[in-house]
View (cartoon, rainbow, N blue to C red):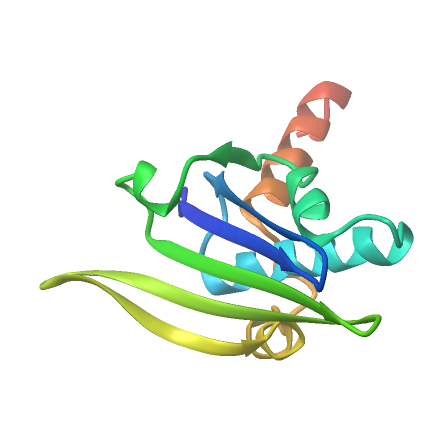
Length: 146
């Protein structure tokens, strides 16, 4: 199942302001987004020069898109804002879910990225994202396993 989402990522510092919006076709539900956020933070930790926008851009399946409204079939929207002040960076997330009756976007989270990850990360290590499942199936197919 494809759960589509858009992610607007902003970086704000004393000298700089950048913003890009990304579309990911898979795993847009909160648990999947928590996985993407963990991967983004991991990339940033491994390479201190990468900002959140650059880290998000190299995630698998992320595509740059003009804005949240470009994809009319998304079920979730996430606004990520990474604010740097006096050498310290804090990243915040606002998360919205589409409601169809009436048509609207309802905010369901507003807090730090660490709190989002803690709240929505999968508790069971057996759980995996759709991408991980597809990769496993693809690898089994390539190796001839059933």
